[in-house]
Amino acid sequence: MTMNGSTDRTLTKALMERPEDIAELFSSASNPARVKMLAMLTCGEQGLTDLMRAAGLSKNAAVNHLTKLMGMGMVKRVSRGRYALTEDGRGLILTGTRLYMDSNQRGEMERERLRQLYIRGREEGLEMERKTVASKGSYMCCWISFNGAVGGALRALGVECDLVDVSGRTGYAFLLNVPKGRMCPSAPTALEDSVYREMVKGACELGAEGRLWTEPGGYMGNEDPSETDKERARRLFERVRQEIDTLGRPVVLWGLPIPEFGIVNGYEGTRYVASTYRSMDTPEKEELVEAEAIQAPGCLMTVSFAPGHDKEGRWLARAVEMASGTVEVCQGYLAGPKAAQEWSECLLKADDGEYIGNSYTAACWSEGRSNAGVFLRRMARKQRGRVNRELLEAAGAYAKGAQVMEEYVGLFPFNFQGRIGDQARERGSALLMELKGYEEDAVLHMKEALLHWPREG
Image (tube, rainbow, N blue to C red):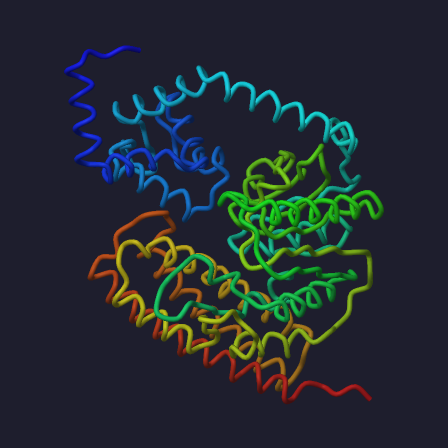
C-alpha cells in the first residue's frame, strides 16, 4: 500500500497531535477476547450469548468489552441484545488482520507455536485421547449453578433427588448474601470454603459420600493469565483427569465459563467434556472447555461424590445457620435478614451499570425462597406436634418471601443491561424490606423447631 506525500503528512500530523486518542482506538482491539468478538461480528449481526461463547467471557466481562467497543465507534447495538460492526470497526479489524497475515515474522511464529503444541501433545499423549464416564451427569435447570451441578452429579450415581432436595439439604435455599454498598452478580457464590464444605456435607445426606478440594487463588483464563497461573490450570486439569480415569465418576468443577459450577464428564485432549447451564435445553450436548480457559474467581475448586447411604443429618441446624447469616461469607459481603435491608438501601442509590448484579442476584434468591418453602413443607410431613407446626410456619414465611421476590424479579427481569427507573427503584426497595420481615420470621420458627427437635434415646 502506498500513499502520496500529502496523505502521509496529514496522517503524521494527526498522529502527533492526537496520540492519546489514536492509541485508545488501537487499544479497543488489543484484547484477545475483543478480537474474537470482532471476528464473529465480521460474519454479520450477532447475539450477546454467541459473542460470550465465542470469546469465553463472563456476562459482566462481555458487556464491559462491548461497551468499550461501542464507545470507540467499533460496534453498534442494532436491537436488544444484538450487535453489529460499524464501518470503522470493520475497516480496523480487517486491515489489522491483513497486516498480520502479510507478516513473515508472524507466520514463522505461528508455525513454531503449532510445532511446539504438536510436540507437547505427542509427548503427553493427549493429542487424540478422549475418555468419558459411563454414567454422565446432566446439569439440572436452575439459577444457582452449585445446586444444578451437584444435583446432576448425584443423579449420575443413582441418587433420587430433585432441585428442592439439593438446595434444601445443602442449605443454599436458605442463604441470602449481598455485597455491601453495591450490587454485583458474584453475590450467590461469594462464600468461604467452610460454607461450601458444609453444603457438600448436606448434599451427602441424600445418599452419597463427598469430597471438596480447594486451592486458594483464582484463575481467569480470559484475562491474560501468567505462565505460573496457566500451570495451575493444567495441574487442576490433571487432577480432574486422574479422578475420571481412576474413579470413573463425574466431577463438579468451579470455573466453567461464565463463571459457574458445572459437571465434568470426561476429557478430550486438553479439554474438559462438560455439562453446564448451556446444556439445559439439550442435556445430551457436550461442551468442550480448554483447561486454560476456565474462569474461577477466588479459588480453584472441585467436588467429587461416591455412592453412600442417606441419613437424617443436621439439615435443620444448617438451614438456621444459613438463614440467620452466621456462616462465613467473603469479605465485603453481608448474609441473613440484614442483607435484605442492605440490598434495599443499595437499590435506592444504584445506577444502571449495576442492573445485571441486581437482576441476577434477584433471580437466584427468588429461586432460593421458593425452594426453601417447598423443602420445609416436605420435611414437616415427617414430624409431629410442635416441630411440625414450626416448620410449616417457616415454610409459609418463605412462601410469602417467594411472592415478594416474584414481584421484584418482575420489576428487574434478568438482563445484562437495563434501566433502574425511579418508580421501580422505590417499589423494589420497599419489597426488599418486606422480604427482610419474612426472613426474620422464618428464622425464628426454624429455631423453635430445632429447640423442640426430638432427642435420640
